[in-house]
Length: 308
Image (tube, rainbow, N blue to C red; front, side, top):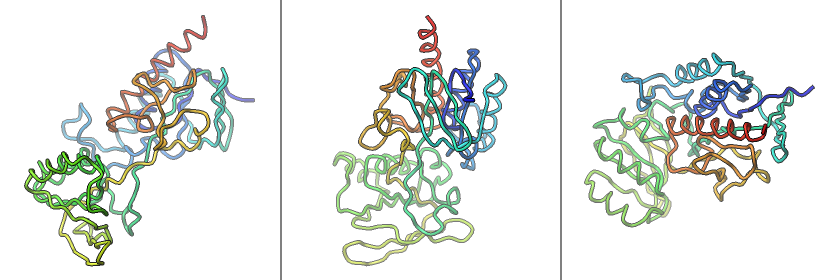
């Protein structure tokens, strides 16, 4: 027998658990499905310094568990099951996992996105120990220190500008001889005074002891290598949204993100997108949580209309 709920939420990060909290507080039966552990990327972050209400910062795993407990206090259920297939087009949506099947009249997609990695040895092991994918999250930890940024698009440039105000020297490493970001952004970087461009270069090796100590780069045109002494490496080569199961059902943009406005409504009635998988200008814990609240409210209004 397929178990039925008012709202099914797919993904247990800040967007998912905020949606679960709001949905359950509204008196709805809510099921949250998460394939691994609560928190998503947040749960793997050592210290979160930019979430309001925690003046000394908060451990990512602790914040994730607190969000889970808050939602479950009002009756939301969590099941650690990987979703394998979705049927979202009908009035009743069906969510299949490796273990079971579930139905709901409203579904909130909150599967998030993963940063695109460089693929270097020890990259994952050094995450949080010198390797970062979010300058605004971790930049403060490198105040006065030398850092490197890898990438040449808008995100890399924005990260470089942000870090130039905090760090000693900022190395911007790009595989080409010109930024993909607008020339006006390059001018701002040049005016910063502490940003050095490494054109036609790629990251070759992460240097480390207990933490990152430096980075070896190689020029793609000459093969010349260079070793940088730096305390941090910020990877800004894009993200990969977790939307593979949605293709052909929910509208996606060219990069694979869900097309949904500020009301989090997708092209399908009763299906909402919250958090990093949605088209948006800023992907942070606080914006994911905000999306979760909006999506749950829109789901509640949808369910009310369906009942009348």
